[in-house]
Length: 121
Image (cartoon, rainbow, N blue to C red):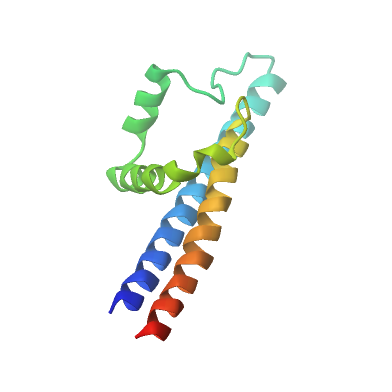
């Protein structure tokens, strides 16, 4: 029973981290494309990598409630691993390094723990 629960938690947590990172990558790629297009057109790019609180609220309004649910769950799952991103690092490192460590834990350590629990019982 506990082994099955750990396996299910590992799958769900890993899926949330992967989906959320994928959505982040899509957003960042789209933003980079918009910045490049604006620079080519001779305009100043208006979106920064680290949005201010007003930009963040606008982004939250632009995302669906399902997207916000995934991002909020991802924030909780990545919070123990924020130490993996060096201070002052870019958005990709701040998001990618904790996600990589989280995937190691959720995709490798939890299933290993589940097998260990199963072997004990």
